[in-house]
Image (cartoon, rainbow, N blue to C red):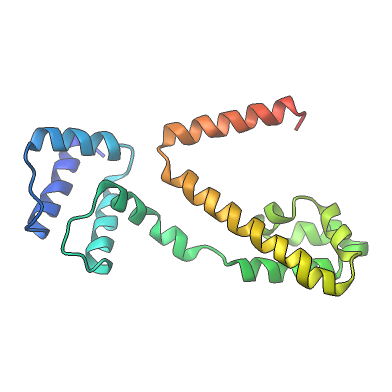
Length: 177
């Protein structure tokens, strides 16, 4: 987003929220541009519209609230833990003999949750009641942790995301991955 687009965004907020008062317009534009500059103006504008239409708040959004609203569509489209478990459970049912084939059929999220085809085979060798209690419970915890981590990572500025990504790659290379 350019500085002029940032000014436009602040002008919309100012016009929409009568209690939004800017003491020092230049400083406010500088700060908001520093914090939101990496975002696309159209995405932020849609986030502002979403905030206005859904928050019910009489107060203007903070920078953090706008950033959170940019992720809202992705969060709403995210697959549920139940759907991913159903997919994995079906693969487990054929996992003893066809674990590699079943693993390849899985969605990317399900593959990340399972890890490798051999895991399907190990789970398939367990009693059915263990799969439907212990394995499913652990799966749910791991899914929730992974989603929370992804959401936290997406909320971070791109520079920090790149730092984390590079660090993760370096650790993987050191471990021979």
